[in-house]
Image (cartoon, rainbow, N blue to C red; front, side, top):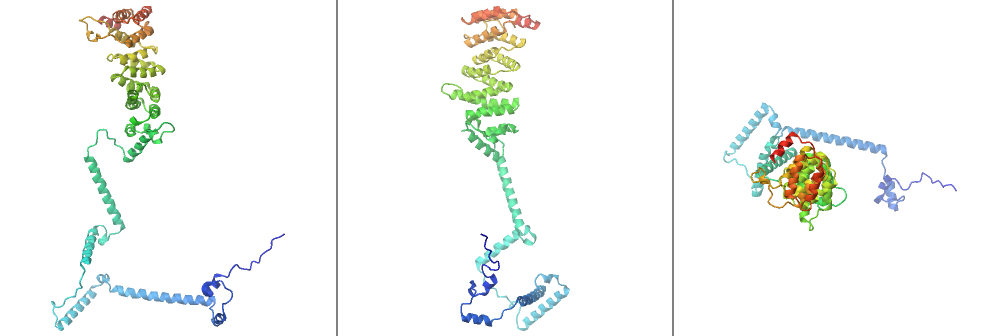
Length: 461
């Protein structure tokens, strides 16, 4: 079936003008009573053309009234206080004449200057006080605007100057206060942000590190920013991740500072604080990652550790890292030469033995220094120049193990004279179990040809 089309002429309701013409504004098509119908019949309605004319006439009349009012205001303004200063000399003369006439009229009635007084109304004290305050403010604000006006721009400028004065005062006070030695010269926002980062790192165990922490190696003042995060309170997991981040992104000298200030201190504190004096697994992994740059590891970790009161336990744990990680021969040679020039300690001998057991092809200069190092421990005569090197106690087993490692690895790199001096050292300072092994290794080696400078050194012994 098709749709039934509705007539378009029919409206949903009467137009608005019809609704306005009805009484009460209701939609009604019929009058309510006979009286209203009679009233509507008697009334006459004006068509649209006539209403336009009426409105036009009313508009014109209104414009004429406004024009007359403006003219009246202009005439009154001529006699205002401001316009009196713009009039010519003739107006001034007329005013003076009028004042003289008024004065004469007053004198005719028997008045005098003293009797001509103005009656003043009584003024409230509070109103007078408010008026005086207003005058003071207006006089004080006369410098801000023209003619003593004080607008919004003047208020803004005054607030800006007041703020600048406060900032200058605070700056002077901060300069007067003496800064602590370990103060960090950073903006307050940076300190606040990285303090919050440090609080996060105290509980961080896994996941992604904060982005603010990852950008620290790219900063010029990365040491100051790192100090704000409080590395002593980091978790071991953070120390491992931070070691990877800083050692890989910083230069060798900068990584040396991080290893010495963060990793070394954490290494020692972990061993001291643990009950069984073991190292945390994550700190141990961090030591391995620090060897990514051997120069930074030796200068920032190994050498400061040995120079301080390093225990054999700490040396053994740190040495196990050297055993597992491959180190370039040049770095190992330099580190070995540095350890040989230090005073004898069991911890130093542990690292010497570990580096010897890595079986590097050491230069002859390092081999000769090793020979002189072990020869110093033999019993010398009273008039010898090496009397200060004479040991006062039995040598530890660590020293004998290091001597055995040297004899096993470099027995073919020493001269015949050096072998004889080393055999004499074994005879005087040998161990009952390790001494025979050292002697056997030295005798099994093939001597190399000595150089002239080596003969001179041997003559000193």
